Length: 250
Image (cartoon, rainbow, N blue to C red; front, side, top):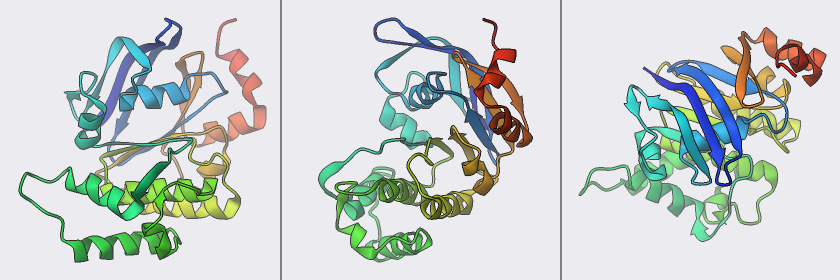
């Protein structure tokens, strides 16, 4: 069972091609990391998988445990088991964190089923403690007035509570100091499971010091141009993105 991407091509609404044939297979139980320079298509890949409406898929397919998801809406993909942690998490004024997560969980229940409030808050508080989040965050509006680090912790909290099958994390380390990075990584590592796959998108090796990937892929000009083990990230860190000149034809 896996999140499988085959020869995926996608363009912006104006026709600009961003993804030019991406193929990647993420089995459950594995952590895959994608690295590459700005403009290589990394964030576009995450958004296309999640169903962002600003992109048009022009070729290829994406399947989740054998089921085609490209014809699904964003909500359907989420219910099927995909979670996208954004590089810049959105604010949701007027909706508390506790109510937001509870509504998301309730939407996944069968008609007529209700969340047990006591069990819900116990689980929520346990996961907030793991992420070293103050209980006051339950009453605050989603991400409103949060620092960058608080927003990222809040996204990991949502991920911990929703327990998706596949977690796609778009530059989750962006803007985090080392202490916040360690806490976020702790939350991610707590979710690692034979029943869950991860796709980490990052510029930097430092995230991979705390979340050890099984496989690392280098993306450039809308394609995966090289794949390898964790040592590939170290090679890229050492050589910089000039390393890609050897891999991508001029």
